Image (cartoon, rainbow, N blue to C red; front, top):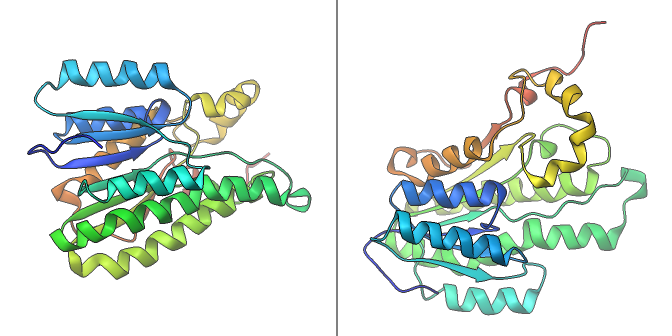
Length: 255
């Protein structure tokens, strides 16, 4: 882990690209020191790290290669992270799992559950003790509107994000008196590589979103940065959609 400094330090999982990279940049811009993990995007991680050092030379940043599906590696990372006294955790890393509910493959679903959900519980276990001792801390998990509204083919993925919501709400009420907040940000369709497979259907999807467009990663990152700040100290146990009004809509179109 990176050395200590006078800036509050936040750990972001899956921080090399997409929403994760936007979140790292937003947190750095808000005055935090940031560590982030990545699985395979080594070039992107190093490029982001170099940019952070140029833009914010007053503090330390670090990138850590970590496969959240590797439980032994995750345990080793968490053992080291316990010594860092992180102020915040943003669990952004995620793994898709698409199949019709009746055709769900258990092994594939369990792999997604490990990355999307169980790795959060392991990281929280490692980091929350220092937060509660210091009576200050922030945990933000990136969920999905898929856990709030059913979508054909998303049963396993939605289940992982639903588990994440249930866990975060419980952790929120268990830690609130110790000054720790725990919230879930639930993006809708965000313009990242993860949604490239929807490219052929993008126009049709955008017509069904009240805001009329996909979100930018920065739209999600801005909310995460706010939740990390002092102004969000009384917000905990919340699930906050960033979806352009998608979950507010009934979903039935007049013909």
